[in-house]
Length: 192
Image 1 (cartoon, rainbow, N blue to C red):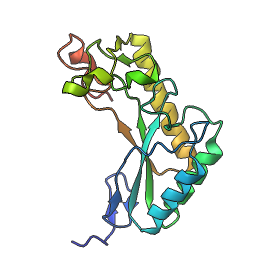
Image 2 (image 1 turned 180 degrees about the vertical axis):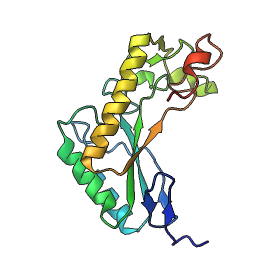
Image 3 (image 1 turned 60 degrees about the horizontal axis):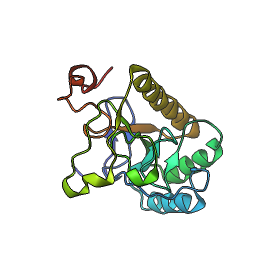
Image 4 (image 1 turned 45 degrees about the vertical axis):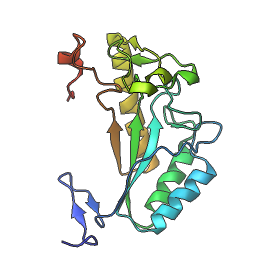
């Protein structure tokens, strides 16, 4: 098997080769939390490297739940033209371009002064780094339904912008239930 042979996924999507640019958090949004000109140039450069799959950095589903000041947010179609330009840059050499969509849950830096929400009111345990994160407010069923709706909305908008897929980022300690809080049986498992 060669790195340069296409890979056909079970859904039928074809990745032109086995080289991928993994997701990372660039924090290069413009003042509207839309993709900046610098971010578009960066993805154009990555596309010119001819990776078969380019996964974006975090794109937040809610501007009230950020991981940093330069984060990209896609929650409505106000700046869809900038997202189209981003998808075009990433796909310009034939790559699949997948948008990583995210809600940070309990992993929101306290210094951003945002209300931290998670399925349970259990603080993030990162040892000495834990103090950088607030204890979250336990999400209500309505909060959880809203975050689910936001993921769906962002995925639909990503497709409209020209992205060929999405990667949903919710790790166990971040948004999914901790499993030891009495809610884990219902909320810690992936839902279909």
